[in-house]
Structure formats: C-alpha cells, structure tokens
Amino acid sequence: MNPRATDNGASTFCHWFQPMASSGVRHGQTGQVQNMMMSFDRKTNEIKFDFDGKDLVKGETDGSSYANGGLRATHTAAGYLVIDTSSPIFLRGDAIFIPAVFVSYYGAALDEKTPLLRANAAVSKHGARLLKHIGIDTKGIVCNIGLEQELFLIPRAAYYRRPDLQLTGRTIMGKNAFRGQEMNDHYMAPLSTATSALACLQEVQDECYKIGIPLRTRHREVAPNQYEVCPLFGSNVTQIDQNLMIMQIFEEVAPKHGLTALMQEKPFNDINGSGKHNNWSMASSEGVMLLNPKDITRASGNPLAFAIVMAAIVAAVDEHGDLMRLSIASPGNDFRLGAMEAPPAIISTYLGEDMTIYLERFMNGEDVGEYTPGTKTIDLGISEVLPFQVPAEDRNRTSPFPYGGNRFEFRAVGSAQNVSLVNTVLSTICAEKFAEFADAIEGGKSPEDVARDALKNHWKVIFNGDGYALENQAMLTDRGLWRIDSGVESNRRFIAEKNINLFEKMGVLSKEECEARESILHAHYSGTVEMEAGCMIDMIQKDVIPAIVNAKMEGLVPELETAIEHLKSAMHEIEAIESEYEKAQLSRTLRLETMVELRKICDEAEKKVPSNLWTLATYKELLFLDPHLDHPGAVY
Image (cartoon, rainbow, N blue to C red; front, side):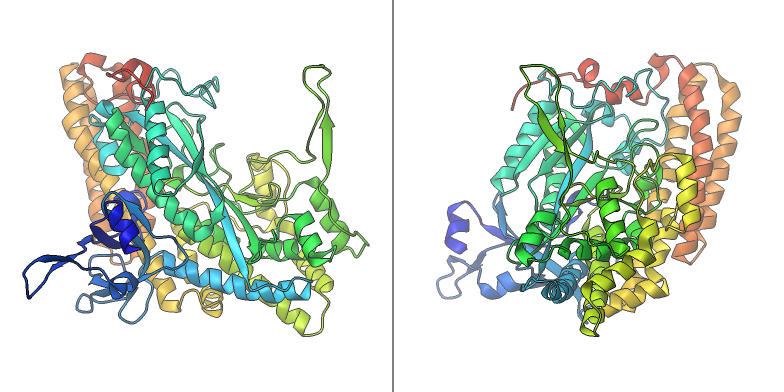
C-alpha cells in the first residue's frame, strides 16, 4: 500500500470511524485524526517515511468527547481504532483513509459500525445453517444494499440569510411560496445548465469516482431544488462507508457552485422531504441471490427454497417491526413519515398479489412447486414501439418494506441517517429467524413445515394495499402490526426486554450497549430540539420583530413576546430534567406543538410585511434557483 499511496500524493493517514449520534449535526458523520507519515531520524536528524503495519492495524485516541451513554467514564477515556478489513482503504487528497471500528478499553462499541459487523457475522452464521438444510452448502451470507440518496441544493447566498438552516438544517419558520410541487413539474425534469446544480452534481460524481465510488444515477426529485443520486449495489459495509463520504463530498462541493447541500429529512414545510431508500438483499458467499427465485432454486435444486427464506423474513418483520421503526427514528423523520412522501410509521411488507397467493397456497399445504414471478405484455398498438414485458406487480411506494424484485426496499429511512443501525437491525432480526428455523429443522421438523408455521403465525404483516389511506392505517393498527408514531417512543424500544434478549442472543449488543444507545438517541433528539428552539427565539427577536416594527405592525409584537417567554420557560423545564427519555418526550411536545403554533404567527407576519423589510430568505428565494442564483450556470 505504501508505494502506491505515496506515488499518488499521500503524506497522511487516519483511522476513519463512525461515532454515534452524528446524524444532522456532524460534517461527514465520521471521526478521524490525520497523522503525517513522517518522523525524524535520530542519527541523521533527517525526515524519513514512517508508516508501518502497526499504524495500519490499530490506533488509539481520546474518546472522552464522543457520545457514549455511560459506556465509559471521563477518567477512562481511551478509544481504540481497529481496521475493518471488510471495507476498502481509500486515498483522498493527501490522506489515506482506513475504515475502522471504535471501541472502549473494555471492548464496548462506541460506534455505529461494530454492531453492524457483529450482526453481519450472526446472519452469515445462521443463514449458512439454514441454507444447508434447503440444498445450498455455503461458507456464509452477505447482505447487499443500494442507497438512494435524496437532498436539496439551494442558493448559498439565501442560505446565509437563514440562521435556522445554518444551525439546524431545516427551516423552523417560513411561509410557503405560491409555487411548490403542485404540478409535479420538477420530478425527473431536465438537469438544466441554466443553473449550477448540474455542474455541482457532475463534480460530485467526479470526486466520488476518484475514490472508487461509482455514482451511477442522478436526477431531479419531486420538490423544487431536490435531487437524488444512486451508486451501484454492494455489501452493506462498503455501501454505508461510501454513502457517508458521498454526503460529505456534497457538502464540500456545493459551495464551489454557489450552493448549499441540505441532507436533513424535512428542511421545508409542505413540500416533500428527503429519504434514503435502503434497497436490501442477501446472497451466499458464492454469489447465489437468495431473494431471486430463479437463482436460489437453480443453486439449491429445491423448488421451495425461496418460499422458506421468504417465510423467515416475513416472520422477522412481523416480530421485530418495532426495531425496524426504531432504526429510522431520526429527529428529521418525525416530520416526514406518513406525510404522503414516505410510508407511515406502521411496519408492514408488500409482496405483491402473485407472491402472496403463492405463499398462501404454500402455507396451506398445497403442492406449489417453484415460484415463477409473473409478467405481462404491454402492446401500445404502434409499429414504432414493439410490445414489451413488465412485471406482473406494480411498485408500492406506500409500503415501508416492499419486495421489488430480487430485493426489499426499506423506503422509510431518513436522508441524513447513517444507515448502519438500519442494516444492523435487518441483519440481526433475520439472523434470529434463520437460527430458529435451523434449530427446528435440526430438531426433526421439515424445512417446509417450519416455514408454513411461521407464515401462519405472522401472515398479518403482509399488506399489498395503499398504506397512505387512513382507513387502511386504522385496519393495520387493529390487526396488531407494530405502530409507533413517535420517534422518541421508538428509540425507547432499545431497552425492551425482547430486544435486549435478541441483541445479546445474536452477539450484536450487550444489555449495557443497548441502554447506552437508548440514552444517546434521546439526548440527540432533545439536543436537536434545543438548537431549533434557541434558533427560533433568536430569529424572532432579531429578524421577525424588527421587520414587524419597521412595517408599523406593532400589534403582533406582544403575542410574539409572550410566545417567546413560554418557549424559554419550556426549555428551562427540559434542562432541569435528568432522565434523557423524559427530556426527549417534553422536547417532542415542544417541537411539534409549541413551536408549530409559534411558527404560524411568524408565517402570518411574513405574509403581511413588505418584502423589502423582511430580512430572512423566503421559500421563493430558497427553492427556485433560476431567479435567485447570482452567477450563471455551467457544465463542470
């Protein structure tokens, strides 16, 4: 590695790791200490190259200022960085980045990656056990993902006139522009050279390619100034590492083009927020795709192998829907889930009518044979376009976890998230079900009977209808599916007895590590709200009230001043509470009730104050590049 790296300009190295509770606040969501690969020769006093195997394999740093939830004390501050050999080392600029885990002196996971690697080991071990019983002899299982990253690109000059965007990533006030996404005219519209957005996307793709990240897809999304990029599929570990770097590169490249990249899930009111669809599948170590019916049937010689694997996944989703909901409970997702732009906070899975009928017949003991996905032919009746085939099943964007042909798509994931926890949960819950299936088979049951019993016990989680429809949401709730509307209550599920037992049994997290994460996530939530509330007070006092006074509309001032005092009082009440969970509960009320009502007053004021007196950047300025970007667009 040394000659290749130094020949390409490397003079520095770092262990690159993923601290907890970084979503929405930490640039790049990673930690690193960069060290030059040099020392002085004690005999000649000349500079010499200094980077050897021990530097590569392990590092040590002060872990005292990272979120730890009680896993280490101030006087036991050592944090150890150990190379993750499953993720490629890469060179960016003059620095070698060494993907690493971050653990305490006693081996407790202080990061997002360690539990993911443990979960991957569990699903590999127990998945191989199950596959052996259905006809596939394999060394293990690999979980693969593809991440669809959504974000906003807004004018940087307007961004500098929004303290809320600068400090919290979302607008905490602002009246709607008279044009939003009503006409669906932004979705997949041309990437115009009239603005610098295309040049920004091109440079991001170029910078990513330099470090081995192939960003294959780019397009405009539904909301104004919203975009999406997608890489190629890969292992969950490497794809998560790459996604973190993609977000960092966006934040660094956008300013060069007069833009700011917003990753937060809901930066603007009443238009779509951003997600990060986690397309997830599994394969054997030898490359057999377990969610591809044709592939797994061919490799196993067992026409029911696909049905057995699907039964295990259905059981995992039904039993541990609370953990799936927990894994997407980022602060920004509170404003996004169920808002016709992301699935509701009710965990179900869509399989499509073809597969549902097939699995139901299998469950009932019928001789179903191999599952062959249906197709249909569309003939447009014009000679210039030949008849073509499409899958028998349409997409279902209202399901949180739909099957989409050889993969599941976890659609509810938030755009700002590090998705290590998402994929830790998916690997862990499947590992448990694979283990239970294997145990039962090794105890004398047939694989088919085990799968049939699982489907009978967990059939309720399959739902192929419209998840946005309120009557369906009520029906699914009555059916007994996991529904946790509050992100705060979702995070509380980390310390539910069944979940601690699951993580411990699979060797993913100890009870102490679960308790620490519950505390950390609640502190992260209340800390986010504290920043938002403080920013709201500051903006009202320095921007809204002066604008109102200058517009001679002083009648609104007493109402705002009273609301500010109420907000301050609520913040003091939250600060006085010791329990992180109780702090988060009150913070959520403050955020979704008190601050929402105060926002209404501010937005009404913006409607009435003349535009030349309103100092904050408006939604019109933030969401439409063409009229508001000072410099001309260009192709990178």
